Length: 253
Image 1 (cartoon, one colour):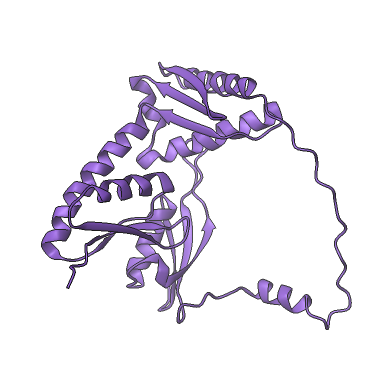
Image 2 (cartoon, one colour):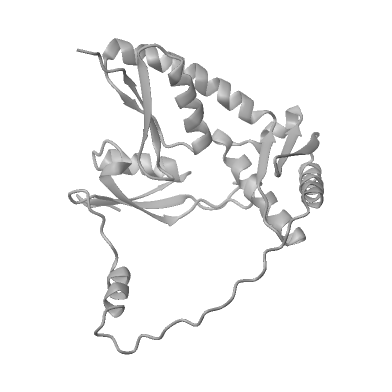
């Protein structure tokens, strides 16, 4: 569904839907648009079956964002003219539960071992504690099935594991999860890509904006750019659509 100022796009992922919408509206990047995620992609736990992502994208008017009617009414009702506004009662926060990191590590390892087994995969699960972080690795050739396109399944698995740990131990945690050495392979691939891209940029003398990435991937690209002669990098846009831009270094006059 579309008109000349907005489109609704359905795609496998939110990123794909945004790219298609920006292209249809002839926009260069997400900073020129208002993006409203109407439906996130669903596919059970690991993207099998389910529904596609649905995104509405509209052209941003002079750099300002359009607020929906509900937000406007909320601001209006908070004005002095509304005498029916009731003050919220203060509810004291629950005391923070101190986490038993060893217990949380065991819960995460046991859960992931059970999950790997339930999928009929052969793999090992190991974990350690590093600076109060749970560092868990799932290894084995067959476990690559739990990676997904650009780590999509890993991210789902990460959130699921954190939720299980929190529910079973009653406390939140910081978890670093790696499956089939994906983090290492992703870093190597991005570094190689940055080197190849730099040659194109130096030849064309034009900057290039990459697709939106998470903070870990952006840091990898910035680190790679810092080692390349004649190349500078910076980030642009807002989360979760923040992108890295590679550009030729400005020549000194």
